[in-house]
Image (cartoon, rainbow, N blue to C red):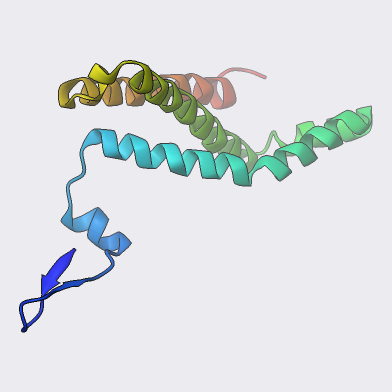
Length: 139
């Protein structure tokens, strides 16, 4: 963002996170893009945790039962739900971005907005199914 000084020259300053979230109204496509990056970073950061759980579950039948009991708690299910949302959103947004690379008409304003709405709708619907499976359905 350029701010003009007293001498008439432009002074460029960094934009903070609060400026982005409060001053600017971002289009839906920008929000999908940002959430795509956030979900990818979240999935990347949880890879060691998930690999550790996989290793523990494959070690023996006793350790499998321990992992199963640990993942049956509400905080663990909330973490699983968050990771499920991250995966589903990242997957749907990734397909959207691949489609936009193939069909350049998809980058038009209206088409981009429609595909962003579709990403949100599909990823949230699939996450709702995950909520039902995690918390609603009998285990």
